[in-house]
Amino acid sequence: MSTPNTKRDEVERFLDKDLLPNLRSTLSEGESALSDYFRDTDALMDSPVAWQVENNADLVDALRSLFQGPAGLVRLRLWMLFTLVGQGKAFLVREELDQLFYAVRSEAVDSVIKRFREAALLTWDDSLRQHGLTPMAQHIATMLTPVGQPVHDELAGLLSQVVGADQLGTLQGNQVHMLQAQLLRLHHEFADAIASGSEFRLREARKRYDRAARLIDKASDTITAIISNARGQRALEQAARALGLAQSRLLAMASQFNRALQQVDRQRVTLGTTGIASTDVKLWLQTQTHLERLAEVALHRPVALAVLAPHEMLDVTEAEFERDRPEALRFESLPAAQIAPEGDLTAVALPQELGDLSALLAEWAQINNSPTADTEGLALRTVHAALLADADGQAARYAQVAYKAQLLPLLGDAQAQDLPGATGDLARQPWRLQWHNVLTPLAHPAISHLSSGQLEHLNATPSPEHHD
Image (cartoon, rainbow, N blue to C red; front, side, top):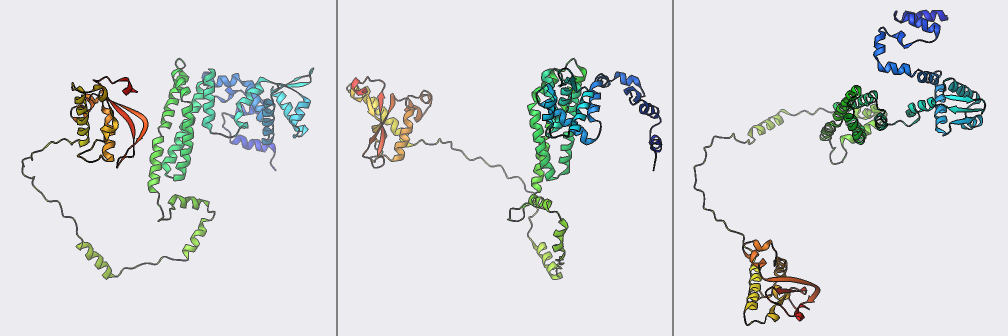
């Protein structure tokens, strides 16, 4: 059996000669300084992070006390610390501690409470006989909050820290650098997934990418504010610029994912008319625990070699030679010049009903303008008379009546009056249309009912009874 001195000699043989004197002093004294491990102490003095670590020596010592010892005991201390901070009281008597930790053995509770008091996480008031939580305990519990919460995406935690620190005005460059490093790591993972060509890895990475893109989109305003407000702070300004570059590179990967997934979709094969694709086969194979058993039945049925007879090969060769093939393109001269045929530009003829309706309204207007006409009796004309006028001595068809009804709103239209041709002639007729909400039954072969209405001549003044 080896002695403690023998084990110490074995350890010293594997240690660096430069660190051995410091280690011996550490083992003898039990404590060491950060500068004992540096060859150049000037580099230590120039590092702001090292200065912060030395400045927070009490916090470091409290964390050492909290995490020192067996793994189970460290977990117990963390659980009791989170329970104390989360119970909502700053001071607790012994009975309240016993109620909180009733399920823990009393000697374990006493050991942890003693460690908390030694690490300045708890105070003891002898006069009031109660324990009190210190600000350091609350600070450490805040630092270790992710330990007591469900595991989420690391990007969400870092983004929440950066956004919260920016809102409170306590944002520092190292927090931005940690977020930048997380974005670069995600970019590397997504690039590997795209390069792998694996459909399942691509789809899983695409889900994570979509979550990351949504988180970045929600925090984009804060990131933009950090980049724009970082002037004057060199470290923060450099970190903000690097963060913006990492953000743009990550968001630009959406098109790469789309191209990779489209390539996977093109490579997917459907097995006949069954509707089963190669992706379904892969998923099924992943559920099988013993893939080697699938080949046992196949090995019992060896593949037979099919040999073609020589005469069959000759027949196929002759048919291939005799097969019609397109002839090669031959040189052809350009065709001779020809005289272009005479063209005839004709306009599309308008329906006859348009001209008939315009002629009828013009005839009615001429009658009203005659000196012997009874203007009071002819100033108003019914819509029925205009729509149901006989065409070539025959009753108007339904299509003709419907077409005329669509033309009546053109009467008095300001834009249509400027048009040339039959449409403008109809719009310039001195008549105005007024429909009523009453259906009038008709004794007509094609139309049973028609909305009542009237046409009013503009150049005549009808009597009051006609308006009524």
